[in-house]
Image (cartoon, rainbow over all chains, first blue to last red; front, side, top):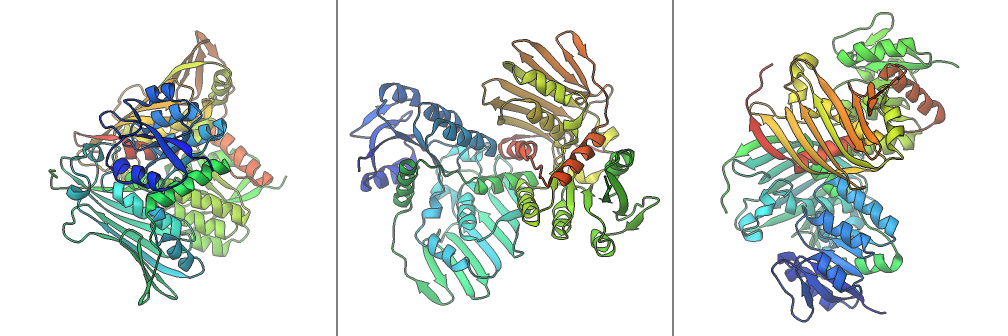
Length: 308
Length: 308
């Protein structure tokens, strides 16, 4: 099958660490151009802006938007209006409403819009979903604790309004949660810890209720040094499921489930290719909705200033 | 036609000022019971809790939930599970997700759920919508400025997390905006002013973009003494529309449009009866979504403490 010509927009850390190498290992896409303010990719044509790229390279069929969420909407709208298929890094936008608007535009232009949640493609997520589907869940507890200095060195936008703060990693946990649970959950209470000098939270405690009745609690913390924790534990009537290391390791009861490894972004681009070839959309806003609800409902606590 | 037997839950200010008198003036409903912690309504059976009411009065067909948003979900779920039609005062819930959950439950139980936005029934709103529909809009400006001490005397829940603060009246403006505009808008920036001693904002400045390209700006302020302002002004290619006094007065260009007065809650209960008799739902979450987006994206500013 002919490769889909792809442009990468925003050559930051996630693009160079994940998008570029995973696309190049796969057989579905060929990177033919990039647009980025400062960075370049060897072997392809590089532009400074998306507008220049769209004007110069009408052969581009799809674009992957790897810029921060605030500028994403305008770029996505331009690309959709130009008839390109669009992949949105997570979170898909700065607001829920703007992504709903993009989804309607994609349908109107008959191109594929893919609001990605890369953690849903972690190796053990699908197996966890299959285990939980027929079972009665008693409770779910999420711990997502990491060191912001290690994972987001010098990234100022995460601390600015709309930058999500600790929800930037926490939304990965919520994207897994909403994928593996058989029925929806909704937030009932939230506590958000804001450093005195920052506009976004460094820690959060979320309490959800599920339609099925069991409680879900999530703790997000960006101040964890030493071992990092990305765990989801579900107690069921048929044993405890422990999905750890960001969805890559699965233990059920005492039994370690062997899972064939596949990098998240390879599976994610498999899906983007399938959406494009099937003429379909994938825009699930539930994880971002829960974050917006947490800001709406959350109780704010001011904690000590954070310095990079 | 036989009247629909209705129970009013939460006999606070909005129930006694609006729901009870408007229902009694109409021909569609008969109030047969209430549930309220402290208040009673003469001439009907009064309960302390919804559970007692549902157990004692299986003849009740519909309930109107006039309690604050935080406890609303649990009551709505109980009523829907008991097979009752449910009317939700605005805002319909404490989070967007919980109302989505209720909407799915109402469909499953084959009863009507009505997430009301009473300002949409203000006398001149429909005429404003009809004027704007075929015209090119250039810009929209909302000013919603009132005195919180006058309108919410001693209501502590509006200042608590999830209480919405100035968005409690502001969401009325957003409910009118999303009703009269021919295409969706989405938030691009927000500034929120929080009193140093309160968990919700006392003022907000919202900037929206519209899919059609024109800008929308909204100013909400709870510190306005003297004349109160509830205005929406739209500039179009065919003159300026000025919808003022909370949607009840309409001036187009220099021309004052005469509108037959009908109290908002009478029109609202007309619609609830039509939904029940037609077996339909009306759950539009756009106004609450914009508020959640404003909390998600907004830049927080701390202003002087507010004392009742």
